Structure formats: C-alpha cells, structure tokens
Amino acid sequence: MTCYHQIGEQKYELNLIDTPGTFDFSYEVSRSLAACEAVILLVDAFQGVQAQTVANAFLAMENN
Image 1: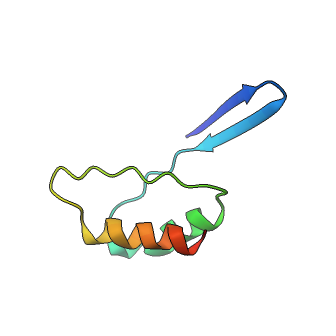
Image 2: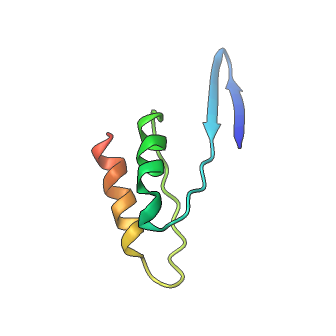
C-alpha cells in the first residue's frame, strides 16, 4: 500500500510493507529495507517479542 502526503512543496511517499514474521522471509525483509530511506517497525507483542522481530530490528539497524 502506498500513501502520498504533501506539506507545502515537499512531497512524501509512505509504503506499508507487511511481511510474514517467520525467518524464511528474511531475504524479502532485507530487500525491502534496502529500498527504504527510513523504517518504522511496528510490533504486536501481545504474546511477547518474537525472535524474528528482534532479527528484523537488527536488519533495519544494519541498513542504517
């Protein structure tokens, strides 16, 4: 899903990427992160923080 927003002359594009949390999709997550300028990691920790969530957070930090 892509959202567009404009403030004054500055235009912003926000792409929402929902990836499965399993480790099998870490390649897809890393590709998505490489294409981004910034990342917001939203976590549903109702059942506690899962290992794949921690791994995805580290992938995001490695991609600055």
